Image 1 (cartoon, rainbow, N blue to C red):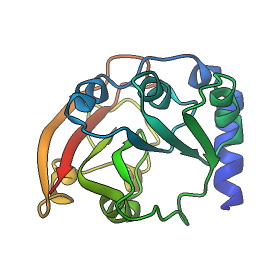
Image 2: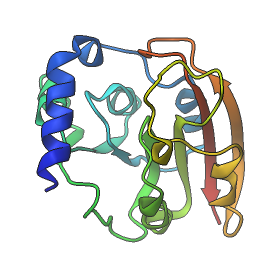
Image 3: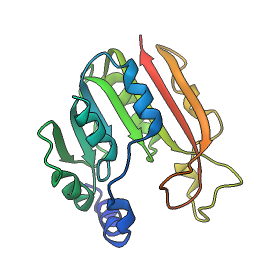
Length: 190
């Protein structure tokens, strides 16, 4: 595992209690699952599991992955038998092909992993991504541009073999530590 990433995220969760508070799921994810035909889900970089918990409550079997033991311990305490928590270094993670009906990735960006996530979807599976993008009105002063999407960038990943179900650019107005612009997309695999 990337020891530096693991240490960084464990420290961030330990030193920022707000990140471990119980939270509501992404509003756009709530709408997205209405289009989902199966019940096997994967959440990438799940943190303390707000979206995984929601999916489990909706009847999904969820593989919840993160590098932070601190965040995953909080999720394990919720004791959902249909959430399977795994400590994973996403730099090395390759999901099994055609294995998920729904894949969720929020507040995290690794452009290299998107290709393997597309392959991991079953036919008619849905991929939901919601993360931060560049904008002059973003409030977080030290945002690394490598982890910010460019305007319209998510659409370009899904030009072939996918139907765009929903796309949006918006400012987060709830929970987040900083007001930041986000992109959200949900796509269905042909």
